Image: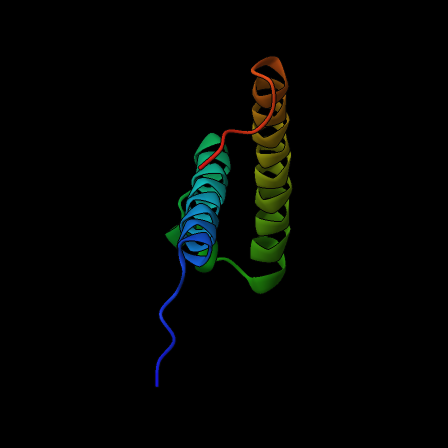
Length: 84
């Protein structure tokens, strides 16, 4: 018997998917800022590709922190998190 996900699980899955897509977009943004594509990075020697992807990941994490901080600020300004 397969369990049917409840609304909270669907919201969590949707939020997680959105978070992952945004993180990927920031990684691609970083690569573009360096004049690179993901395919070019994949074709590089492993050490070089790893260094570039580490920098891209750091950039994405920093940008995601900014997004989260802004979201918390908006929640505070509007009296707390929205009820679903």
